[in-house]
Length: 161
Image (tube, rainbow, N blue to C red; front, side):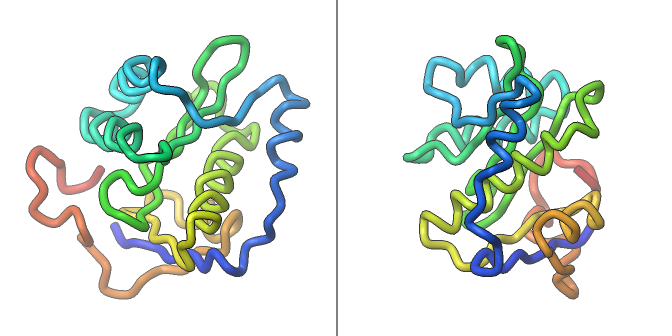
């Protein structure tokens, strides 16, 4: 799978998606240290060991480079950046029954806008699955000749994430 590029300077500095999620009873926020084990285990259970490792790394960044979606004390999704490498968005995921509510878009935008505020001009979305989603939400474009990208030769990873 190829990588995609997002021009962060082209994004609107519009955080209204936070209020839109709140109207649905969903909070988008950065997790705090005591939640690390809960988020990492949730990612492992719903996605993969590799994504759990990357998520744990995002918690070690200062400030934390991860956002979560929560409703009534239940974790619904997560989005990280600067986890596999600096400037890379991902991993990210939403619990299957919760998909289609805009949670994935909100987590993506939270991460990308946070990256812009940290001083990044561009973000790379590594090993993209749903390319159309990233095109629509963030204006991402494919990076030619970027397969297999930064994960080439990584230990313990399948040929696709």
